[in-house]
Image (tube, rainbow, N blue to C red):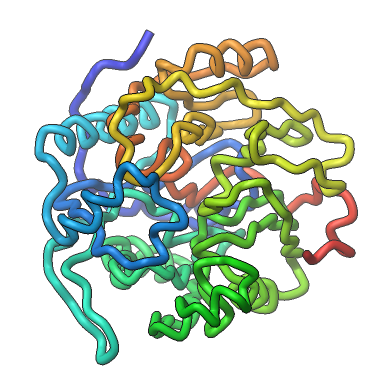
Length: 376
């Protein structure tokens, strides 16, 4: 059974924290979820094309992305995706989770730096890309798509509110995003990656959290410089380990790995390379996606099907049409909460992408093998 549409408050504000507690507390992808940000697709526009996008975007979408940068997405498709996001908010609230939303933002406005210009932004639909919570700290990521330069602005009031209530707030150096990062020489330095090592860049969605350990992939939007910045900035209390994946279009690790509980890892069988970090873990290869081959996908592959959201170590939110995945997870001991989300798929993500888990019950445990000696 899928969930029907219900009324959801747009921006309820930030409630006072529990006595003596920081309102931001999230160390893993699976501890019981208390508070979450769900993104918005209001005023979403096509991204302004840059050549590095060709390494990650489906070739079938290149024409639209090149031709329509800064222009609104098709209204009917956008409306359907926005409705699915509202339904997700209602489902999460029914599960006892506090839901926050970013502010509306004018993504259709052009902007420029002294070295480049963009016809517009993109959206505030995927907070997982631009923000990360590590314990009591909110980290702003230095993303390499120029159109996303101001994307965190929509979340700024939320972040300031949490900071005033005791959270830490750490922003990576704002990248210049000049051609030095994307040139042919940079590609050679980066071993064929779309971004070289001119300056630190990473998308937060290239990182998965396992308590004290953070696992990150090198990708077409995340470089070694960015990984090292994150490692040094988080300090000795955390261990950042890079792993390799079999994905020539690598961009965001959450369609390759999905830790659902201590010792349980859902993996993409086409991309996952076994790693000693996960020695002793129970590994479940995700079933093939159930998405029809002709479904419009601007940004990602159908493997976004495994981009699930854990509500606790026994409960996951799953797209309602992904019946093979639901059956596999149920047999693995999970309660699945099915929600229609295929229209959101088209805009580049699913439940993990469109959320930022601000507070989860739990602390900073150690769950991985040998991470202290493995740094990629």
